[in-house]
Image 1: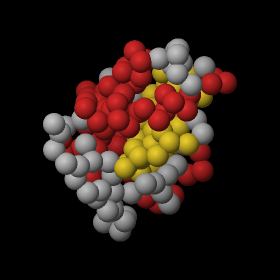
Image 2 (image 1 turned 120 degrees about the vertical axis):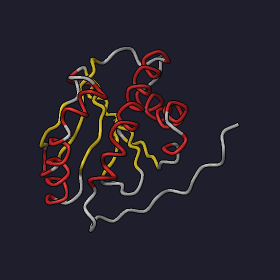
Image 3 (image 1 turned 30 degrees about the horizontal axis):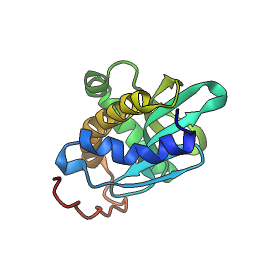
Image 4 (image 1 turned 180 degrees about the vertical axis):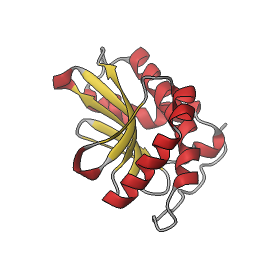
Amino acid sequence: MLSASEFLRRVPDAVRPHLPEALSSFRSTTRFSLAQLWYGNRLLHYEVWIRARERRLELGLHFEADELTNARLLAAFQTHERAVHRALGDAALIEHWDKGWARVWEPVALQTLDAPFLARITERLAGYVAALEPMLRDELPANVAWSEPRARSPRA
């Protein structure tokens, strides 16, 4: 069994092999009870959040920029709801959230924090990235700051 912090620290490296090469160069951070991955703007990130009190883990794409950007992205993803559900299934929720934020996410029952659960979560997170990142880039408002991470060296 892994501690929550160790489980989350392993998320970025564990998700990379499941992503297409074009999406393998992301930035990441882990803190407290969450791990975040992002590409051009840290406020638009993928997140794995352990909610121990609620006995669940949440994963998905979070829009935590300014309220207008978040609302525009939420509306765009709601427009693509059928495509999102085709790619990720009906468990994917698209909704307004706290503090003017929005997200495309799903709850997962919290299980023992071990290697099999890590594999399941990172495969699912990779599915979110592969399905949603192209949509995010297509729908990104022109005035939103975006700075691509440098490409990683080729995989061995």
